[in-house]
Image (tube, one colour):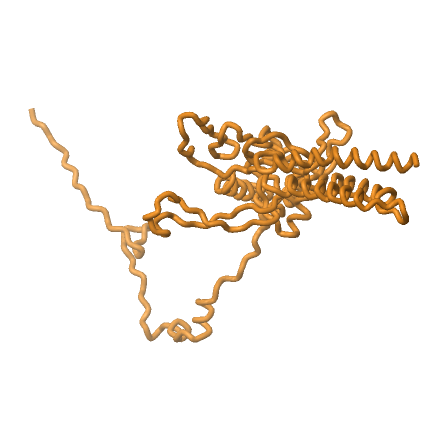
Length: 346
């Protein structure tokens, strides 16, 4: 038997080049121009106008206005950073009072981020829930703070208004006398001098006018009478009590109620002292008697309650002044009632 093998001859493919034509098996070469045949425009040198046109920036394209979604995202980032980097144990609110006005103007009062379970008491526009069972008695306080304090440039801490601060020197190692001032960690921190609570419009618009109005009526009709009926001793006692009442209210309303500074780690405490606990609302550790006040949006040491008449919370810092204010209110009220009724009977 004879076996026949068919041999195939493989042919190497042609290299593809820009000058190769696929319409035929022949390769055609594009004719090259001679340098003398080029036009003058292709060989002309660059001028200063050409260079300036190449280096000039492209014309500015009009930017599209940012969408409300991007504005809200940027505001959320700014609010979160301010909340995390705050020196004090405060809740998540707008960084400034001007931002509070912008928030109300852009989002209205139905902002889901600010009306959750951790939202702050007076975060509503004026009288939006009037007539309902859940009417907010602090109607419009934050809006008033945003408009007035935003224009005056006062700082914000939670829902409270910082009126004045001062710098104090803090030493990290005060017991180590041999350590130099640089090694001991001398630094300066801000200390609150005057601060008012979220209900300061009620304190200035209701409480003080009531005290001054009743006092003026008593002074005109009873105390400072012309003639033989004037009693200098009674006038001095009444004036001192009225001044003490107004001053005690000032000390309650404008003093730091005991706002806790932020502690990212619990301080060293003894075995008999109560342990500190972590609060997610302020991202800080707090002692047992320190409570987060939702109206003021800060943690207050030895918190007792929030008093709308004084405009602020009552805590460790202003409790003595508040007790003096309560006593003086009853003394002045009883004295004014007795003086007015006795003068009317005479």
